[in-house]
Image (cartoon, rainbow, N blue to C red; front, side, top):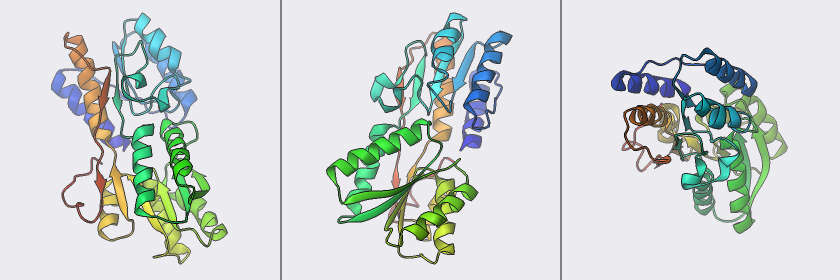
Length: 282
């Protein structure tokens, strides 16, 4: 996912005549915060394209400190300042140029999980696999689950599995959930690498064919897993688009062109009926 986004940012920079430097925070909010401090103190950058692990911690430095120094800020994927649950233009934080995303917002997750519940009527016991606790994708998935459970109480989540988005950790943490819930019927995952770990866990537990998996992510692996019926469906994420359009927004602003406060990205539901008609972004 991140590699696709980095490549997109480099492609856009090349097209629009920008130079770019990539900072890897290693999934650490404190590391990212320190990196932002260093970026601003160096004074050699005039724009930041930010994909933050903890948008609350970096709220002030990106929405106030950076603009005061004449640094334009575009935000992608994970909103700032607790705006994770907002929708439309309200997702953008004042002081920043634009927010690019939406496929991992509360409304998108709510619509998707509502669709999953409708595809599986009647009593369901569900395990939900997410990434780290504070990241907006996790926050919005949790809120979307509560929204759907309020309308469909028979759709019951019995376990939340928090991971670092990796295949090994998803595998390790899914196995005991399978053992503790022999009547589990569904797994919902909000990233393809975690889904891959869950598929391995189901195979190890001898539960193939008894649990349906619905996932968001839409990686190349997920598309193949749909084709081979390891998972029921996937929903595409947009790592390339969000980074490319983030750089483009910064370039447009520097060239005096109008920039939307919120650029909503399209997500596709992919099942066996259309898996050959949609292309993954990573």
